[in-house]
Length: 186
Image (cartoon, rainbow, N blue to C red):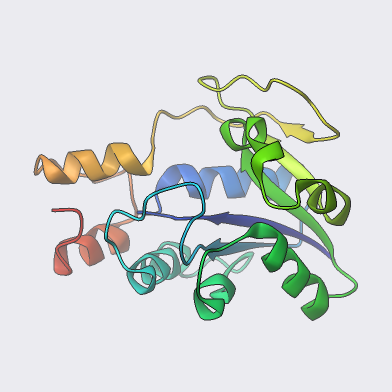
């Protein structure tokens, strides 16, 4: 079984995340993609949105898509979320699976700063989605995938919400409704 791992803060999850996952799923003929929201991200601020809210939004965004699955491993584990710990846990749960860690070229360029990155490169195949704004500096045995380029980011969406602008079409309707109902990012 070939399983993609797409981790992140998902603060909030947006259509760019969904498109990225769908393109990698198809282009690499994966069987499943696991979306794994971080508990406490090691490289980003959480913007005061609780992990349980980010998890719920990812669950809402994925609802009805059978080849995407949301896991709460990092939130359940607590503390700072390190990918290497998550990969170890997944390999124990799915010993026969082949894992593909999906990252953007912005993260791939910072890969050497990740905890135990050399071991991580041996444990999983690294899939890099090229982003125009972040040219890939080194290929480093990565699987590079061209994806549809969209100028959407979670920080852009948070900024729109602060300005009281609509985020329709940038997030799923269910995520937009959750953000509004829980007054997130205001």
